[in-house]
Image (tube, rainbow, N blue to C red):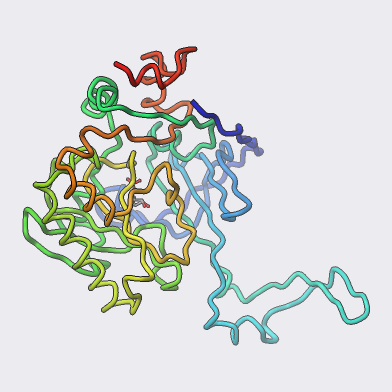
Length: 333
Ligand code: G7M
């Protein structure tokens, strides 16, 4: 068992304002926000200076909300909009030929990306909160006795996935669809990508087929689906965004956040969150591993990182995986 350093939660003063939401049509969950008026900040639940993100747990209309703010990268094509008289400068240092300034870009160039989850469940708050993390080596037996029963009883809702597959949401964002019920999928921008800069390209391919929870359920019978997603996904990305396959990573998360099968496609220039050795499995490797051994992902010990308040971590802990006994001994079961 390895541990990573504990991250800090920072408390911020609670602020109360009136909520202004364009909730003119339909179900509240479909209402678009026009600003954050009335948002009540409860706590900053994570901060990352490298990715320039901050996540806040708050209340909107009396219900929990999670808001993630992210400063966006510069767009090299917009330099002519940055370096004009509309950008005001405040000098902070001047020495000989060297000057530093705070530059205030025009507001149109200054947008911050905001992801809003409302109403947010406890699981969402937990998912976005910085916590101590633990390495788990999940054997075939631990998957069957610990992970699977938990997944069958409790997991994050995949309603957003069904909304996409049934074209109830995000239909206008679909980049490519193969409607075949066995090997078909929908390819569309991940909600983390604002669709502007292909250097930050991030798409997800969601399988039409239900019942493939994760990597663990992949075997030779799923190879046509995997190969179809890889090949058609790459072709569609080339056609739409002019990004060739050699500039792309195609991978699967284990553990995923949502247990309906999907593949991530990202530009290799993007430092995508979740593209770590303990989470991302390259689709090409997955295909080849299954071709070598049909039951590869059923049998293989899979390593992933879980956070201290996650149900999965708590279940592994309950099963003694973080007692004095090392995971090597547990593997002998
Ligand atoms: O970790 P996992 O493999 O389950 O990743 C799921 C991916 O789906 C993440 O990269 C999320 O950013 C993305 N995602 C999650 N939601 C709720 C949505 C959504 O509603 N729409 C889109 N387009 N992507 C989402």
